[in-house]
Image 1 (cartoon, rainbow, N blue to C red):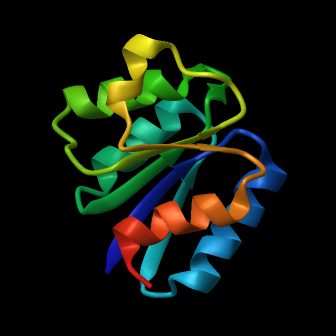
Image 2 (cartoon, rainbow, N blue to C red):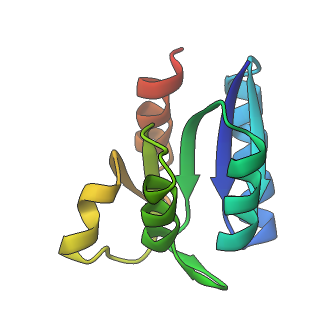
Image 3 (cartoon, rainbow, N blue to C red):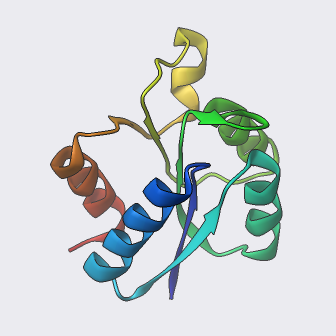
Length: 117
């Protein structure tokens, strides 16, 4: 089973997007986290991550901090930035794709690239 880690601190947004992902990709297990550190813990517990999706602003860091730490721990899979804040130029290469909140169809198309139909 494909595993997707989704990190978002806003509970309502996290639940809505996780539910949407579960409905569109029932073959995937959606693992959620609400902070950078909880996402790192979940990544350690789930070595078979197919995809990581992260918000930009987390209570204990930025989405690029999470991406950098995951890359440093050897995760080489795709990471999608899903945020409302701009990414510093020197951090863009940490991500496979960059999506803006509110651009739902574009986000779903991006996830489809990694999880299939």
